[in-house]
Image (cartoon, rainbow, N blue to C red; front, side):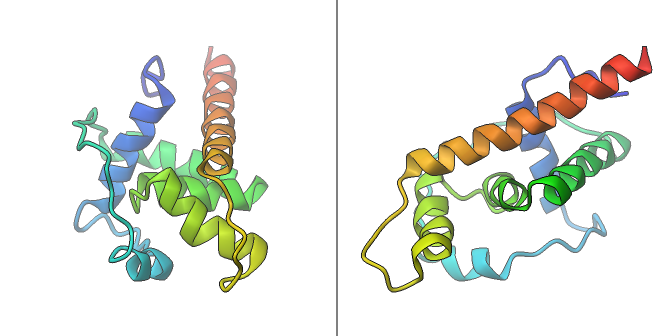
Length: 137
C-alpha cells in the first residue's frame, strides 16, 4: 500500500504527472481541454511533485475511477484540475458555466463553485484512502 500520509493534493498531482507521462497506456485525452488550452492562461506555479511507481499510480487510478462512477461531475472536474491542469477559473468558465447555463449564456459560474467541487472530489479520494488503510490493518 502507498504511504498515504501525504496530502491528497500532492498525491493527485503526482498521479496527474504519471497520467501525462508518455507511454502510460491509459489513453486519457480530453477534447474539451484541448480546445480550451489556447483560451486558458494558467497562473499556477509549476510544482515538483512526489514520485509514484506504476503500481502506486494504478492504485490512485482505481480510486479516481470509483470517484468517477459515484460522482461523475466531481470526477471530471478532478481530471480537469490534475490531468489537464486547468485553473479553478478555467474550470468554472469553460466547463461548469456551459454545463449549467449553456455556452451562450451571460450567466457565469464562480470559481468558488469549482473550488467546492474539487474539495468534494479530494475529500472523496481521501475517504477512500482512509477506508482502504483501515481495511488493510
